Image 1 (cartoon, rainbow, N blue to C red):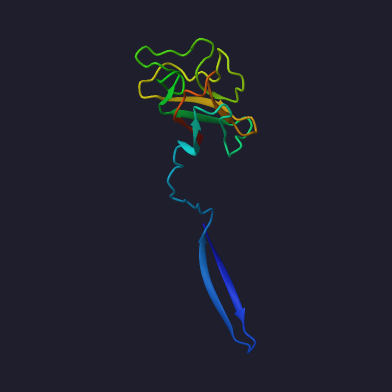
Image 2 (cartoon, helix red, strand yellow; image 1 turned 30 degrees about the horizontal axis):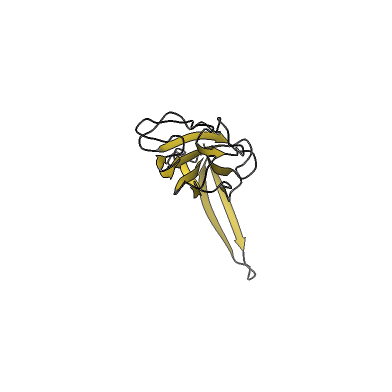
Length: 165
């Protein structure tokens, strides 16, 4: 069913004009838009963590409480008397995680050097790249390379914070 709309315009001089238009009853508007793109893990911050520093490095961004982020550590540095190490292991010819008295590797919000560095970055990866899911706590994160003797370490590891966007 079609309706007729008449609009009358009166001017100051006494003239009038009628404009007629028709509109379809119950017309539906369709917008042809593409679907939302899928979310992807995107690097939102990255920084180097010096393996020779017992104080480590803190993120500049605050990780929102309850939000799942992904942390990625990559790279190789010289640790433990000239032996190469990455974010979780050292001595790549025979990968080890625990030295004499510490679990070597990159700790996140783990201030105590002991035999249980947190997080566990997973099994040995010869590409020296590790990723974990991390739940934000409404604070910055602090990354410290866990070792008992920092004086024989040289080099840095890269830590990246990823967010679904």
